[in-house]
Image (tube, rainbow, N blue to C red; front, side, top):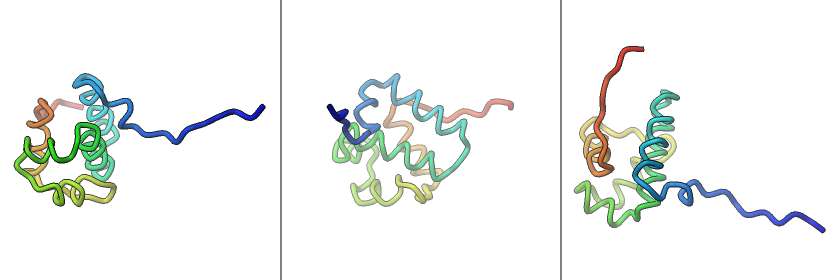
Length: 94
């Protein structure tokens, strides 16, 4: 009997603010700007892009374009996104 599989979708695991914060924290620890942008995009899609757009004041198109692999959000856009996620950016010594 073959094993039944489904396609992995990280959005299925980003249901709570705690899960979302842990995901962003892991992305930040990795340090890859493209991965950080994509992680925020994953959370935006998990929450619903329309709702996330309303929370950030950004357009849906800007969210899809900016928060994807290879996206390059400005500091202002990143700040709006993290604020909408209920997070804040912080600097800590390595």
